[in-house]
Length: 175
Ligand code: IMP
Ligand code: MG
Image (tube, rainbow, N blue to C red; front, side, top):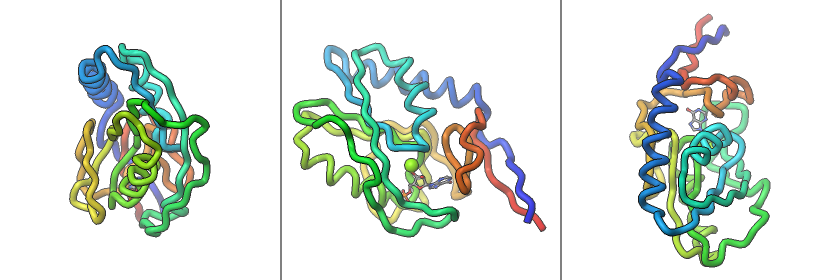
């Protein structure tokens, strides 16, 4: 099978929208410090672009959970592969995610992180596929709602490839 990637959201549009969301976050957290939690690996590119544009003090930590194998379908299994380095007590925590699909990963993650006594816990995602939701999650900041298509680029992979594309694209398969 051949693969090709069709551009869904060009780089400039993505960067512009991230700047808008960063501004909104900076306004909402005015006078506070925000502790960003990057969900590895997909959210790395988004986290960097977002963090650079937030004007309140920022600290960061990283976490890795597994939900997908080398396939385009969710396994439904969520496992902590790498936990956070720092405790969350009293922090204004903002989870930074690449994409919310079934919502299983995030509803699980929010539940665990809530138990660590943060002052607040919010969620920010680059992409959301609301049609695919199985587990309900409250998303505080969404850059783009997208249709039910498998996307890559800007940190998102298909079998670990395409993360470095500077835009968001749809993988198309043909014989
Ligand atoms: P959920 O638990 O079903 O919401 O899955 C979320 C995770 O699945 C994301 O963090 C991604 O790692 C992966 N994922 C879901 N949809 C896509 C997609 O279209 N492209 C690449 N990865 C995806
Ligand atoms: Mg992810």
